[in-house]
Image (cartoon, rainbow, N blue to C red; front, side, top):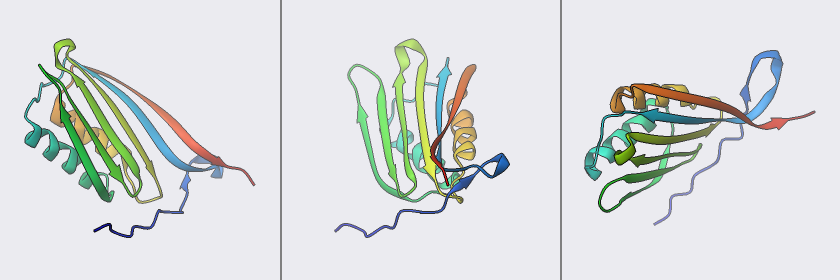
Amino acid sequence: MKKNTKRSSKRTFFPKKIKYLGIHLIAEFWLTKTIEDKKIFEKILRDAVRAAKCTLLEIVIHKFSPHGITGVILLAESHIAIHTWPENNYLAIDIFTCGDKAKPYVALEFLKKAFKPKRFEVKEIKRGEIKK
């Protein structure tokens, strides 16, 4: 049974009163803690969603052979996706949230604690500028 979920129509405000629909964080983690267990991976993703104060709609996790996991979480506020390459000690993280209640940077900090990268980079993209 599908749940009827409303999308947040509230805007995210940035300095100088510029309005955007959301924040998109693109993160890269290197030399991370390797997690190959789907249940542990799913728990980390669910906990990141809770930390971000977001609403989980659906979750899909796929384990690759011989190694690597991709997890995608559909949120009422948009999505979180993580792709792992354990053979390269690398994780690609995508966090896109909208609305004024979502906390994408809190989710990112949670993921840093869970995966313990030795090095990371983060890019922020402000999406959907509202022009009046």
